[in-house]
Amino acid sequence: MREFGQQRLAGATPGQVLGVVGAEGVILTVTGLLFGTLAALAGIVPFTVVRTDTVLPGHSRATGSRSGPSRRR
Image (tube, rainbow, N blue to C red; front, top):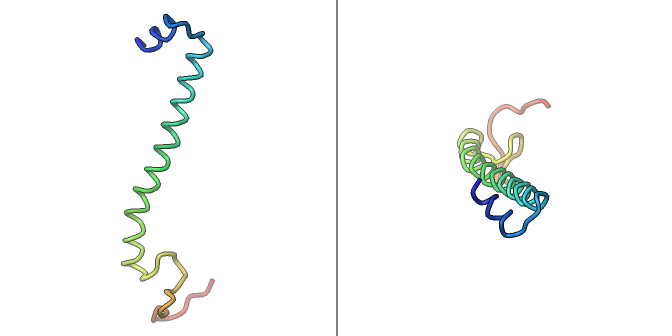
């Protein structure tokens, strides 16, 4: 609240203050989505590799295929 008052005292209009708040909200949202996605992948990818020996389900590595019965799609 104090920061908004200081912006107003410095001559910012209410629309400018609202624009700064909106821009900060968008930046925080995008940053949170990016780092949250990276954190989720950091946990999911190793688990998937250990469980299926591939990064993506249904794909085999270039050096060899998975053993076992084939799956129907």
